[in-house]
Length: 388
Image (cartoon, rainbow, N blue to C red; front, side, top):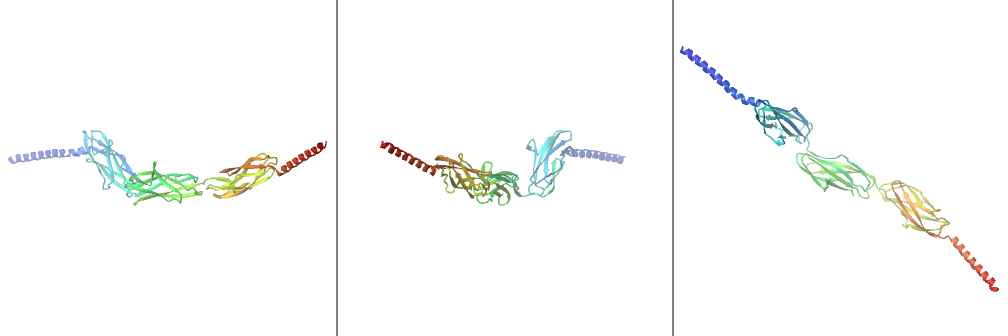
């Protein structure tokens, strides 16, 4: 009977021990239940981005439990060493409280490095016992270079124009860079750079940043019409960016009209002619074609040209034209004005000539004859009436 009682006691103690063990096990599992009550959620588990880009995740922290949970936040880079930041309400956050049955949102920002290989990279966000696996697919091979580009590399203007280009300098490296600016233009061209309103010879650009630079190119005065390429570079000891801008010079039109001795006056006898050697000079940088000669002259005067039209005058060259001025035979002695014009479709030039008209020799002789006749008549009268 004693043995039976001992057996019952042993069974009782065993049952009590198992009960206490179960209670103890249940108490130990409470933290696991609390952790399991928190869930991390974002709809985008894998995103694609190029090197140097920034990815932003909006992550919900959901509390499925029956009491407020204080959650420690963490991020596992999986050895990738990317820059990241967890924020909420515009500030960095590492711990957050979530009421029962509610959701709090945090923002995860990931910066894709510039120097990186193309491929898929794994990450993990932690909230106590809950994890959220994330992946980023780098869409292209990373770079370590500088880019200098312009949206409008071609400009057209006259030789007295200033050609202005807007260029963008991009620093595709992981460090801040200082670039020296240079241009290789033809002799006589003046090329300058400006950052905003300031003239510069070098600029600083932040890592993965960019800066707008204005390039101004002024051609020399003697430049000929044509297309001019201007290579431009931004460089330092480690990296260089370059581009080429193009200036199309259409040339300037300038015409000059004068005489071989630069005198703009002459004389002519009424009814006779006077020849002038005119010099037509192309002072511009573009060819002039079909230069027509015309004149504005007094009534009943005639002005003719040989040739009357010059087919072509190249820049810096001259052409000679002979002008013949014929005065009216009834013109009185005095000064007259003859305006001569040389005109092409692009440019014209005028010269005003003062023409002094002299009386005809014939009229002089006629005057002398009249005077002699009058003298003879008077002499005859004196002789006739003097005898009486």
